[in-house]
Image (cartoon, rainbow, N blue to C red; front, side):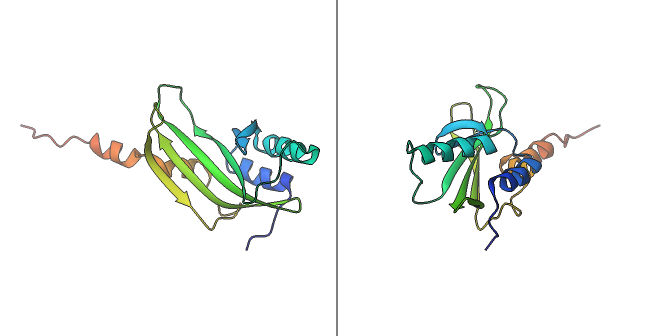
Length: 142
């Protein structure tokens, strides 16, 4: 079991791994990772929101090139216990411009330390190898 981290440490480790884009916590509270979680917890303390029975759900884009291009989305399930956080699982999904799933990768039994870097997570669902193999010339030459 991973040692739980405070919000600053948790966010710093993920930011250092490249997860420095915008996220939503529990489907709302858009912002950078730390701000999104902070806003959610502030709302919880005011009584506007309640803590989930399961893990907190953080969602965001790992790669975005525009509405008409494929994108890579990420969902993270984060355990929250007495002001401490730990990452339990991640789901990385590549979707086309219409939102149809192209490829998905699920990572379980994670910790914030063992989570892949952003580039590694994107590589799990990108088909770069297939594209590179297809570009080699195998035509008959005279």
